[in-house]
Image (cartoon, rainbow, N blue to C red; front, top):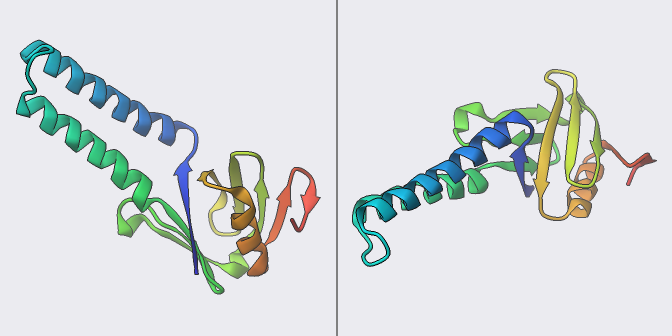
Length: 139
């Protein structure tokens, strides 16, 4: 079993990371309005820690798990996980930063990878999934 990190693409990613940046900005503004540069006050610090904890959980929980029988797209909440048996995945199209899982049951699922692409594509090819990268078959 292999685990790889990913991030959702498109609107989901922009909304989430935009909210994290807005939360950090709000915490900094709140600190500057309450205490300025002199003292650290606990309400803005609690806010910043909470926002950063949500970001860490996001990165930690979103995993693509590849086993010999299935590919699991793990989400933040376990009830939202997607389990794809190997025979329902038609192929995988990969480019520099993202990849698309073409499936029979869910259609195209586009994800942005975190980390190196080669080990991910190798693991997918080992379980029998056709992998295409920039026009090359079976990478």
